[in-house]
Image 1 (cartoon, rainbow, N blue to C red):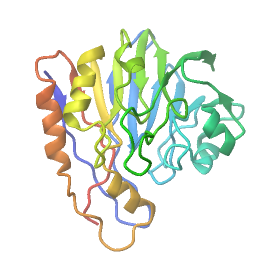
Image 2: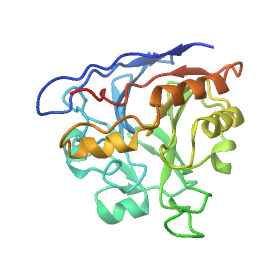
Image 3: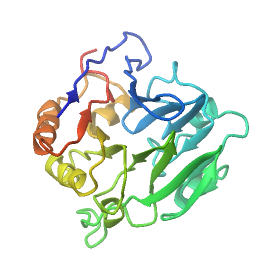
Length: 266
């Protein structure tokens, strides 16, 4: 099994800029270039077209490219950021989102769980992103209810890319087929989608390449208002990633590290 662990460089200054390392997926019509930005924000390029998924202005958007298509997975600010959308949206470019997100940003196109469509000549399928485990804050109810968020399968150059959004390994994800690249959340520090659970999910639909994202929420909250020192890495992020890598050993899945976060040193 191949895997890549790369370094992130924090740039001193007021902005939260850091080195973002693109990776390439061979495809018809040229490579697909995937550039993680921050947390769940990622840029995808292919054959002159650009997709921005969950663009967020807390990340470094200085090198981000104007988007032909924007996909929004959920309605919290780190998924739905109107300022980032305004910065990166080409004139007339579609913004695809859920009904819940549309209530906050009524300048897009709603695609419900299970729906599909073609936007900027790119086929997009919406996959349910939700939790099945009851939330401790609302007994009996999941933190992410069904129908409020989307994952997306995007077809580019004959390849199928899955951006899962934030949720557990629900049946809709387990039923996916022929996924070439999957970006899945390791939703730490909460007790959903920890490393072994994510690894077991990967084993159900076996993408060829997998990235992990959305895995350092305490640090992400600090990045939105960076006062004082960054929080300690209480969850041992490198160790949790290693646990995931070990759990998918022998499954024929390539893991790529995504450079989703700047380091904690200032």
